[in-house]
Length: 340
Image (cartoon, rainbow, N blue to C red; front, side):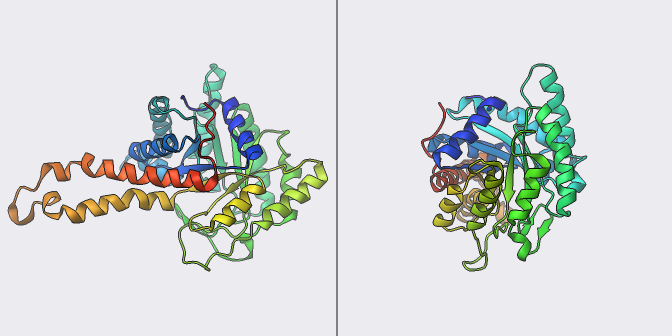
């Protein structure tokens, strides 16, 4: 199937919310990790979301070029070609974009989509995330209003974050403190500032103790009930059940019951990165250790070309990551729910 159109993407999110499941949003940094994500979705018979962060986009452009827009554009164009060969529907998304990177990442990518839409084409990406967690809420919402209007004109769904996700991702660090828990007051202010879909559709990354990365049990204190509180508060004011399409960030290591509880409160998307990174790298490490004298020209020997051919360990890495994507689909209950 091709990359989701704006209409199909909206249908995907509606189906997830109504059906009580969520889509894994898999971070990718290369054509190979993209193929692993697509393979995993296909094997799980699940539609899904593929996303690229600012650092991932910079890496995709080449380590000496370091241009985020170039890398993201290249990924999107490549994905349009290869995704058509898989029997699932996939949406393309850009992950965390803080204030200091808006002009070098999210805004120019929206401009590209505006140009495409003006020509009768679909947007380059189906959604973009504005990460205003590091600025005061008032400023966060002011910027969100401007970006949401622009996204709506480009037929793009915006994602925004209120509250702070702890840990670190691409140099953005969130302290582990009370700001990890979004309040009903934050949610009401958000609805007042950007509406509840009437001024452009958006997803909301509300925080309930989320932390990027992997930690030992007991370190992260998730409180999914926070999501119910904000949905109830805003729903009561506007007369709408579960008004927000919620996003679960920092889900690595979460308990299954916590994930399912969050889904029951309206989570339609969960970011998956750390776990799939490890699932991709672990088979490569295994290959290198088992084929030490083949991948290296030890003591002046010639090594083994079949061992150091990138395809040898790349195939194992793709399979390992794909298996973890299947597991994510099972955890989020999206397996077997593909649209076509």
